[in-house]
Amino acid sequence: ITQLPSGLAVLTNLTRINVSKNPIPKLPLDFGMLRPTLRRLDIDLPLQLPPPEISSMGFPIIMRYLEDLLAAASSCHLEAMGLSLEAIPAEVVDLTQLTALLLAANSIHELHLGV
Image (cartoon, rainbow, N blue to C red; front, side):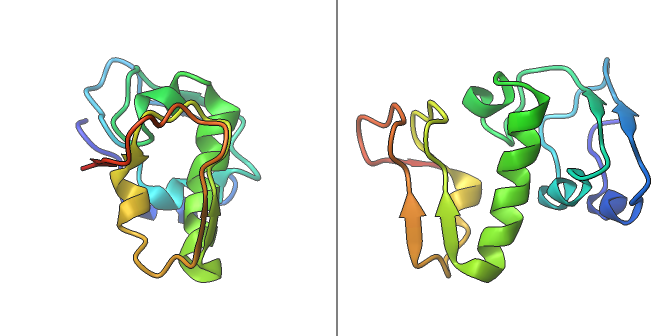
């Protein structure tokens, strides 16, 4: 397996996913919809999406980040504070409709895009 399909979010009773030992670099954004039910995700790190800074923080932060990205698509507001980001992730840059982007308490030293 080299990628997870973006349709997994329809599996609303899913509580555990184990895809370890598979070269999966990215989680689909709609994976955040599984946050209420998914209790465990076994996947090899580092990931490209979410960025390594976030994926290294563990499962709860990964899921919150993906859920926040999904919500930002409709709310036009994204809070990505305190995540040790070194650059603005490409998936954030893709949210062209954003009207508010809060990046306080990160490690962004230059405003270059993570694309």
